[in-house]
Image 1 (tube, one colour):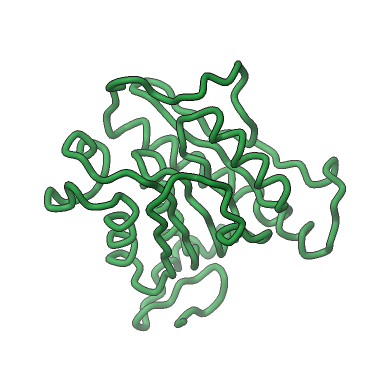
Image 2 (cartoon, helix red, strand yellow):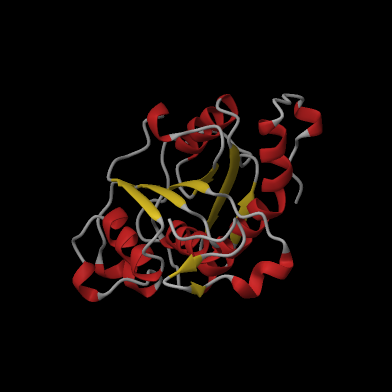
Length: 216
């Protein structure tokens, strides 16, 4: 893969991320994005543009016409699996990124989680969020939860308060393009801000949770 180092993405002789080099960002090399809706799609695209090298996508749904007010897919993507349409967009922007789409619902698959990645939870079911959070903790994976509705967005390292309902959104939730973009940018930003210290603790074999808690 044609790269100079972890901060400058080289493709076809072009330093695509050169203008962020002075920021000394520690971009995660590997990420898992669970949920390829409005927020998850922009999380994955932001990661790719920032220089993430390996992105796995998990979602069981297909693109619907009503998704296109917030997803950057062409009209002919309607009916395609969201993860495949998103993978195509990532590769169109960054053809050297390794993208692995999984068209399925989250079933705690150990095979797609490694202990040196960031897990982005962009789902809307509390039971699923709890399962993902538990698996990330078990595998020492940095967990970032992100989501939004028409006027609110969330990006956090923990789970929401409240009892389990066993379901997510009911019916059509009002939404437009703005909140997913904000939620995704903030989620990737806090992951980048914490990834250096977190991955360093893993590399050194440190398991003291008090010393490796993420910061906001």
